[in-house]
Length: 365
Length: 268
Image 1: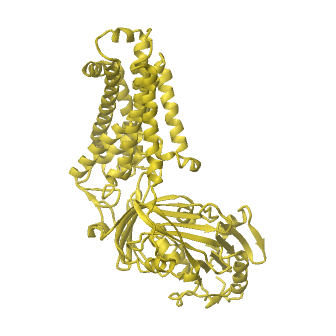
Image 2 (image 1 turned 120 degrees about the vertical axis):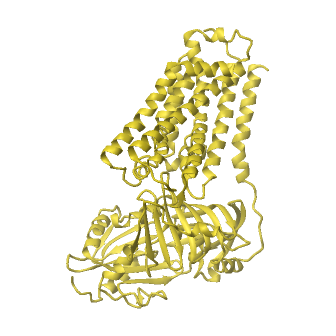
Image 3 (image 1 turned 45 degrees about the vertical axis):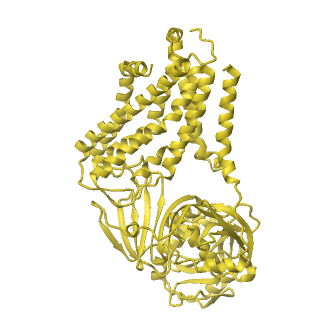
């Protein structure tokens, strides 16, 4: 074999190896004549479907918040790798993998064990009424079901099918009809046999890059091994108990205010009527949360927001947007609480909400 | 031919000096941990280092995590870069080729010798770390997996052996790249530095979001996947991809080394 023939063999080998991934990616997905409404209905009835899977989420949001919310910043601003064992809404485990460790949530019967390998800690906590988003919420299955849970039939349409996690997934697009929302569209690809969302992309207005993207890379329907969702405290680790699972719950317990039943024209979300200082409003992807917060939480947050490029400061407080998420913090002082208002609504709606909550009497500290 | 190269590798003082140096840093780290009882903060430091204070038998994994990003690939690049270029620099390559052995077999023998060196280095580092960790940091009957489940000593031992095998395989790409460069130059230093430049570029691109489409193909992409062997259940996805990727690097770069070496005029 001559020299040039040897190099030709090597070049052909490289070409062959290099062409495998794009060829596999270009394999067409099988379409279906299922209507958008039928697909929406199958997603809504899929929360009891058991599965195991591995998903990756990518957040493109740079949230201008402080050390109390670093988990939230990581969750919506970085890439997360998630393993899930899902027996049902009340029996599941989701692990967030990192290069050098793992944090896991083992959830069963209204309580969760939070495992952190690098901290060597295990914490048992009852499910709070209100909490901040966590990694498990960004699983395509949970995120898709949540975003589509209140969609109207007139808001959805079909998208071409895609191959996701080795399965033919049918596409569904939600374009919210409420003009107050900052969400432009939500694209979801659904496993036709189970109705479980396998890929979700959330786009803000005028955005070409998804604000949040989540997709399964491995997905196997069927009940997981029961032991996989059961946490046994390992040797050398003490299982601790906590009543306050995160800042959202702490704010709910300790700030002395009563939120109204309607805010900026948005109705309070059902199931949260009894909550005092923290209210959630809206429908579908048009959501608004208002919370009365003390100075030790609001002061560093205000400093952070006021230093954020593009921040708008006026009589309502300081307003900052991060992709489709808007945050507004009303004025406050050491004795007087502020209102933190956040949501996927436009600046005018946030300002209207701020004007309303500032009229609510809150005792000084 | 393979036996000759293996014996040559084992008889070289440089082999043992390199392995000794690879053991130095993990041993120093174990001594410091034992003296201060201060582990790294969560999320910082090499994998498993925060766990060894509770269980010193996990120190082999921490030691491998310490040498994996830099020291081990440097050693592999030096050894592989020297394999052909070193012979050329010393003027022994043409005498080596006088023997009735094909250049292809010589090349394969050189690669096998490099792999044997890597395996030897990784096993010695793990063994020394086990002794050092057990003596200085103590042990406990049962260890926690990364996922929080209980691992028996037997499970830890089996998974550690798998990690040793995986880390050895992870060095194949570096070895193949250095071997190709070693056939292209008479300078072992140039070959080693060329391979290291490739690895530094790979590590840099792994940190860039803009390079996401390239990242699954970078040689360092799956190096830390040996941690996945200690999750429960074992997470095979990245381990399988890591092995496959190293196989591709060996096929491509060893193929290029073969195409270059078998047609090259050897004058030194």
